[in-house]
Picture (cartoon, rainbow, N blue to C red):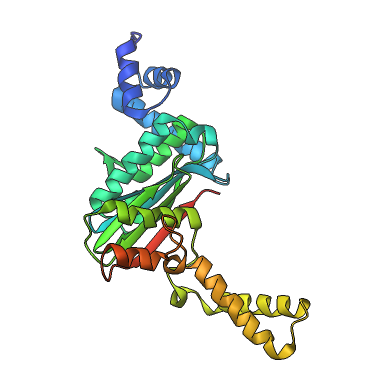
Length: 276
């Protein structure tokens, strides 16, 4: 049998298609006897093997990104195992491609995204497995959060470790105003949109902590409950988005800042994700 010659252009083409290293591409083409499609399949099978071996690993690093188009936005996280990979340009490009697919198709969750086509004949899920073999680390899309509202704005913190998404009840062209609130969410990490959105368990916990603190401070028992209620109010003010002092003008709450920008403008929902 004649020996198949593997040219540098063959290797380069396979590398461009799969992202695999030059030596891996050359080995795959050699094993496939020069058959390009078979070489791609060999590399994907390698990815499956690596993915199976690393399935129990923790993928806590990655690339967090949010993107909005008009009245719809998505927050997504592509995770990996190490910061070295998370900062790699090819990994960031991959994450951005996944986001483009997600926002174009207005997916509602990670499962829907995974089933979509990444490129001809390859789904997002299959691409993740393929790239697991290329990179050698566990990769997974751990977070897909969406917001639909009259206006949706996204904020990506430098370094892509934190991102946020906020929806509003009015269609606003002044994106800078809305972006301040998205930055607020990223920076101040509110636990809920407003007081009503805070669960009863959290309120009860804060009340009991306030009561315990008041007793330790020697407050009279007949005012302990009142003191505890004050502590709860303070907690809610500091930890709910609309009540927090605005980062642009700390003399105004976020609710007041929005209303001053456009009468009746309010935030209706937010999403936030942080790797730390």
